[in-house]
Length: 350
Image (cartoon, rainbow, N blue to C red; front, side, top):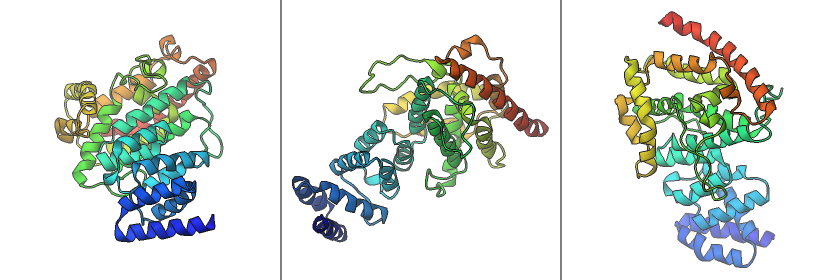
């Protein structure tokens, strides 16, 4: 095996220096595969990617690399490698399919945003996973672990969404944290995300190979303002802190007319649907209202309608498991406390 490790290194080094990646992922790759030492080749290739010497992996090699990492129970390595690769060189259809299939949402958020300048579509996909996790038997949990580690997929995916929003609102790329350019993009990005979050009706579930004809809506997805609602359930204080990044920014511009804000948000689902069937990457929404954010009063009214509303049977019946219903009640009370602490500052500002 050591012989093939050395041989892999020599081949990769030569092809990188001579810029012959066609040779590396063509005849050389096939030779290692036929000799049944492809896993050795992939391990050495991984080192070159992490050291920023190799910024491209051919689709066929990527499929085998993902399978290899899955067998080794190290799927997170795929995401770490993606952060060192040139997104502009990727075969987006194949890599995005792989990431979705293996629930690698950090990589999905990175590839969509860095490679396609699309920040909303991967968030929609992540929300699909969050909605499904609420309906699973493990449900939601009102009490967090003392070490902060997620108890469930609901928490794992939910906190990932919150972190992604925090980075975007701060004008940083996810997950690297580098500044987004140009500066004007930060304002249009914030507007796209606020418009998406304030959508009253969730997009239909995306079909999968296992469930090509899933119901249009169920559970939390079927409730009004499902995206806001589920983020509030995950951690109301953390979510409100994310919103404060934008609300407290002197450079942020908000619509003065609440009616205009309603029209912008109501129109958003149609624009998102159009984007899915076009080659453009979310530019439709960014052009709406010149990047201005929804009206402040509209934002607070919507939050209040979700957090301060009485817990009707219609809402609690959305949870199939009795434990989830109880935990939803507890989280809702916590959300009220967080919102009442959050609100006075903005009431003073008017």
